[in-house]
Image 1 (tube, rainbow over the protein chains, first blue to last red):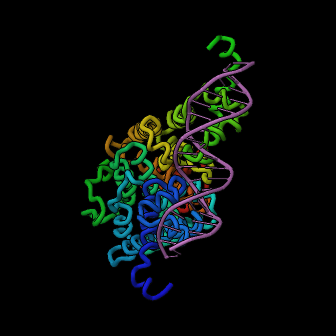
Image 2: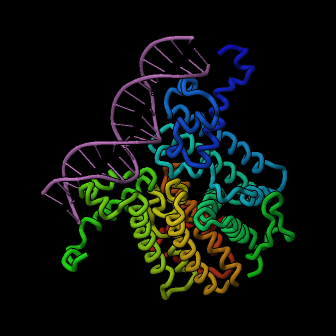
Image 3: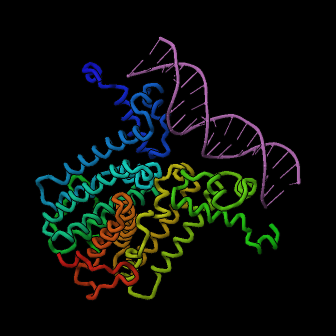
Length: 211
Length: 211
DNA sequence: GTCTATACGATGATAGAC
DNA sequence: GTCTATCATCGTATAGAC
């Protein structure tokens, strides 16, 4: 690839990947055909197969780009300078497009992804990285390692399960309810900060604080 | 349909539905073709299209049967005579085939399901019914209505998210870790029973009780 | 690198005999 | 009710010219 083409943005390739990411997020990988990606991106069929000889190649590029974006975002939230528990609340309570589903978590029930060892590995890596980040924050908050890991799993599961509930019921509030239910439990012992943060996230009045 | 055929079990129809349920659980609805259902069930193509003129009809029958089974099982656990919190712990901690994913929850990211209003409604109904059951148990345990609903959302989200984590990481323990993390929080205030129940479920040593 | 043309199996059915 | 054709379309490419 020449320097000139690189400077032009390798625009065909980039547009293909961007289109793939969008379509994968909306329909999943298995339900998205190379043809759809091609016409959504505006490039021709010849270009598509020049850059990505097989659907697997296209899927890898799209999925890897999406997980890279997502992990970067999560790290930014979980590695702040505020109190560890606040960062966790901020991550869990972040505003999300609940009805769209998690771009990464969805892939977990996508046959085309799970049947492909490399794709599965990319998705798996995202979640192990994320769990490590959340567990580190819980340890920082004072929990022992095993407890921190369990609670990190719970926190990430709440988000993923919140997506499922929201999509199933057609109501984005299902996700925020799940998050409130969890965050309320986190803060319930005496060690919670009185005002209650959930800074950047959905700072909704917590129904669980008053049982 | 004659009484005799009914007595014989309408065997073609039943076998088709059973095969559809199995395939949907393993591959999802979108990734399952009528042809696959046909050959898995052993009936001929003529019979398939006689009983289920379209794929939508077949999908409705399979999905409705699966949600009916699942809601019945959940109700049995959540309406016992033991303490309400114990029933909830029992439901959440139930042994599940984590790597297989939730037969119902998975459908939430199945394009073929979400694009079909009737299928979506069946899946939605399952979750609203389930949330109602869990919320009732939380109310029974002494929570006010809003708090009970939030916590019910959290409990169901933990299970659904646990499936996602297990499948993503390829490790069934990811689900039990999420459950431990959540159940530990439920029992952490002074009102927990000392011995710790989680009767039928995974009564694993709770790492979160000792922070 | 990009284009047009072509190939071939699978999908979701329909037609009509038995 | 069940069976054996048959079909139009899509999905996933490959071939070869420009």
